[in-house]
Image: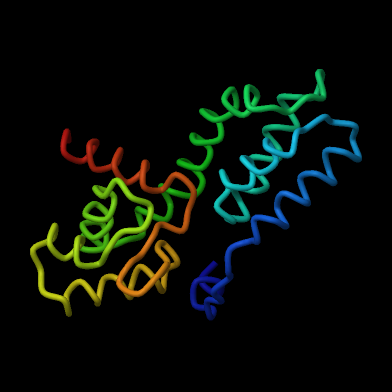
Length: 176
């Protein structure tokens, strides 16, 4: 384990959503599952290109539709709570717990935005900190692939439903 922890980290890009959609289509159609194109697109978007989410969502849909062989929007709503729970336990919590308190404060400020793409200046204002301070934690979170740059001066969460997770964690921590 110490060998792995000391090893060089390799940054992997997100999976292509079109490729995810295509992969789901092929696997499900080969097994005679019925899935509409719109549902395949929704599934791809639900993963945000995160490979674990791609595998998890496909597995849950497959398992839930085993008898009917129909995957539709209704089925996605049925499996969504389990999907979010598994993401929470196996990805979000592990990632979040490895962050510093300042990293978390940055994420709390970012999560308060109702937009997917958050302006750095808005985060800076919420934190009431200078630009160089915010830039330091922005860089740390980018390096850890928790956030990504979406445009000049704006960032977004890389993981699916991570904004919701961060908001929930903030409430839990305030109540402790």
